[in-house]
Amino acid sequence: MIASAPGEQSPPFPAPTHSEFGGNGTKPFNTVASTLARVRMGDNLHNPEDVQTFHPRRPSWDANTLGRTITTGGANSYHPSGRRDFTLRELACLQGFPKSHRFVGTLTKIRRQIGNAFPPNTVYVLYKHLHDWLLKEDNIDSYVPEDDIMVIDDHDESDISGSESVIFGEARVSPAMDDVFMGQSDDEVIFVGTNADCDDDCFVDLT
Image (cartoon, rainbow, N blue to C red; front, side, top):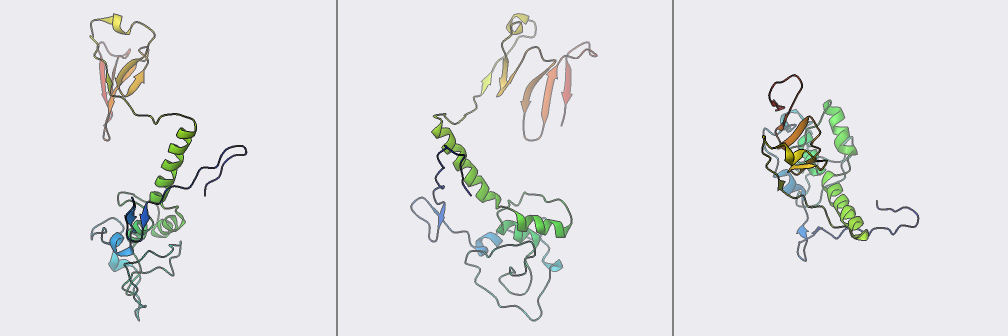
């Protein structure tokens, strides 16, 4: 899982994040029961009435344990009750996908995506560890964005007449650009600037 180019030191493995009972900086294991408890009726791709049911019922198993390996077919992974198969949302949660994740494709393709996935929560921990380790090896501090704000008088062109960049929030832009990035949230992107087709400043709302 972790390797390095010839001549480069191999990174260490990340520190444990979970243990059987927790403690010493770790959290208790996420069990099948604790994971399924986060799934609610009405959640996307959670339709127990549409999944395969077993007659006779398969042997039930203890949900207060670690989950079994999830494959594209899922033949050996079924609901702890033994009465039915997992729903796609249950499988996705057990595989480490956040509930907000939206899959694309047919139900069969979605099941393959889940079974083939490298658990996203594991990838996050691994990549963050490698990122921090590489920065430490290169004696580089982690980037922390600064909230730099510059207020410019529209009638005073001397502030932006030079070649230096102008800072708005966390974005650094050139004053020569026709559009100046003013701000961005999760839901909108707004630009304010000049345009040859407009007599005055143009406002473009890309929400």
